[in-house]
Image (tube, rainbow, N blue to C red; front, side, top):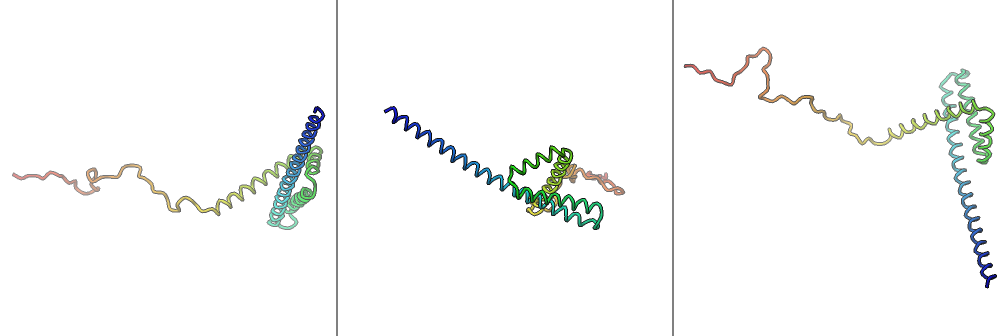
Length: 173
């Protein structure tokens, strides 16, 4: 009887371990999937930034310092986007950490620049979305109330140059 209970307990323990292992694998798989989707979105956004910078460089005369710098930055971001897109997330994190350790000033400057650019794009897209939405406020001006109460007939003053009128009649005797 004891060995039967021991076998039952061992089987139950093995089943629990197997279920935990299966659940862990499912969670890892889902985490990898979510990570890959996030990585893809980041790479796409980086590519969009690179394209915008290439477009901005076209606003300057070809060969000017500004155009060259914008193109170099855009090429760097485009290359980084390809790296992010094609590498495993753990490799990307390791590469970024290594770069940050070896070039802290460049890394912090780049992070600040990227944050600035991202906020500008977010604000720009937000204002475009706002412009597309119909306005809930009327297009005509709101009615205003006068600062002082309107004059009534009993408080009306005569116009300058006119004789005051009296409500009493003069009686002649």
